[in-house]
Image 1 (cartoon, helix red, strand yellow):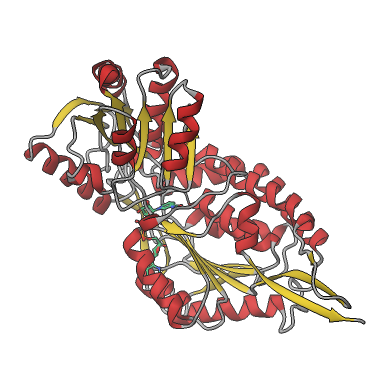
Image 2 (tube, rainbow, N blue to C red):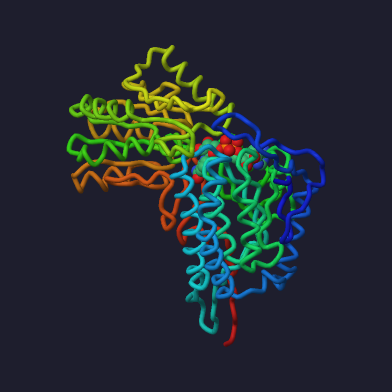
Length: 482
Ligand code: NAD
């Protein structure tokens, strides 16, 4: 593995000489290196993307019709499926996620390209009623060159949704993957060239956020920034974008609640409540990390969840158990510290999972932990853990359930479990968040479903057709013809 970026249709050495070690989270061992990109590397990638767009969108990529872009995206989706196992294996090794999850991510990556391939030539403007003697129309234009900052938890899914929509809308892209998970996206850029994307349409610059990421946000050649990551970094990205009036989409963290009412189908709910927090070892922005349960079924739900949590096993990605290791030592320590602090503060552990005996002692394995009776104002109920740690708490009635659900700084996703149709919609309408699932929960799912948050979970929407609108700018053309 050579440490290179992917710029202008090929692997390119970094302009600096430094590299970043690639660590296998399952044993803490170094197994490669990536380039530590700097502002000069970002500049080279932005120039390549601008050349692909052309000054007046007349470059090799900018001049393509929607139909041509759609056909290329369809080819890319098919090629991802051909390379499916290779990409999944690479991702599992790089991020530590269970192979099953990495395979699902590779499928989702292909799905995003398939979905947006079909959407390219259905994205259009409108004609507007106006004064007599005029015809007014709106045209959806690409921004130009878009910057994409990707976190480590679902590199393929998150790059797929953001780059897929942006390319479909006609932009050229510069991607900055997370320093802990860059390999699959470097390979994706190569595959894009192989299927015929013009040089510069999709570029990848690896490196640290404070260096390559900050340089991308500050670059005047970037016309839109799509950032997915933590709330704190999102704030600095938003500020950098505001400095130069650059539009930005922020997909940030969450503390998503699932509300379980007494009339819920518990047989259906409990496995979903479990999966929503252990999927990807809890490292999912939309993880259902708080479960609020109506008092009369509280003990029953805690009992059933405890049985499930006791059976959850973590182990090496290749063993494909319920969970793999966490991404890195920093994340491992953060999760362990939050669990220890909650216990030290007297929050009760109802159940714990186990780590398989063949897991390396140097790997970042965190067992699943179920906390019960979690105080609503405690750290565990308010802060994102980003690990397999679930906070369960009771509520007395619908009003209290809604108050607790809305009682954090976040607002990403919520789940509502009830058979009462009136309550389903009444509660969904009162929840402050971007997605509500009723009698189901889609942590990280749904290529077709617009996704994003309110409050500290960010703004703007990705996924679905809605994302295409965010990756365009609307131009109004008024024609006076008498
Ligand atoms: P992070 O914010 O540390 O890093 C995300 C990306 O930003 C990385 O590529 C990083 O290199 C880059 N970055 C860091 N500092 C930067 C800077 N100053 N300027 C520009 N880029 C910078 O987040 P993380 O730890 O990689 O990811 C975990 C977080 O992401 C969690 O909070 C999670 O909830 C959130 N997340 C949100 C979504 C969503 O769609 N809402 C999806 C996945 C993850």
